[in-house]
Length: 378
Image 1: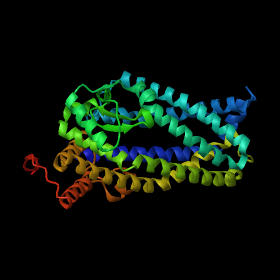
Image 2 (image 1 turned 90 degrees about the horizontal axis):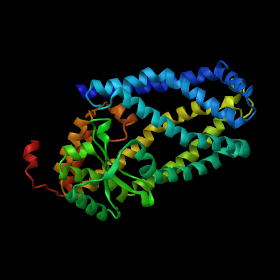
Image 3 (image 1 turned 135 degrees about the horizontal axis):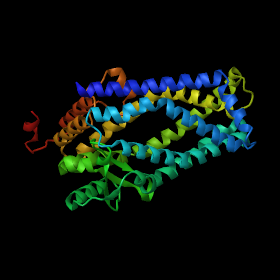
């Protein structure tokens, strides 16, 4: 089956990249290459901050070159092979350059802030940096839909007034005031379809991919938007902020302890040594790996709750089921992944489990959709 083969290949590449990155980082530290690079950079300048930026850029370029074949195959060749991509080769590289520039503009100041905190707060760096990252993440969430996202996509209000009013009505039911509903040119890169609720405060936006608008009925789009609004109504955004904040404090604390206690394994003596900083990456990868199932379990729980909200508000469980099936087919999702793969890697329940849960919930609530769609599905 194409979908299963496609997803297995993507998963295998992702795991391979993670394992390879961990091994290369470990060897980079173990064989003294990190210290050698740092010492070499200090021959040009004595500024720790300039050395840190150059150190990071050189490593980033090296990693990009090493992983380019896997990344190119996964994100370009494989997508075209399974007829999911609309990108030309030129567009692929253009988008990659834009992504790199944006990441640099955001990432380098955060990197410099981190090192400043590390140098000035010593063993308490984890606490100060966790607080700083909380505020930075809030600011970025507010800026994303109005500054960052438009760099990559053309965003404009949708033209279908009837659909717009339906969506605004759903938003009012969810307790959300929206000025407008937006579409973006998702089709310039992919044949996949999606919609999202993004932003915080005054920058909250409902955005729909043009691939969704062109291929789905108003009823189907309505159920998708109701699901997204369910995340807002059920306070999943707030809960994720709370969970993410508590988690970041815990993770930074654990990393700080492990980082300091293992410095001597690689011949380092100070937490502020630039050559030692890749060790943070090793511990972050290991802790992230252990946390992945927990985060995905919480995410899947929220998805089920948002599905229920969509059914309760639209009263269209069959339309919702048809939409989910169409989206899964269009995005080449694996309808029934291996149980362990779903438990460990999937942030959303499999379509088979979601459909079963929707049918069960609709029956419990006696929600019946009188559209003749049931006969079509059967």
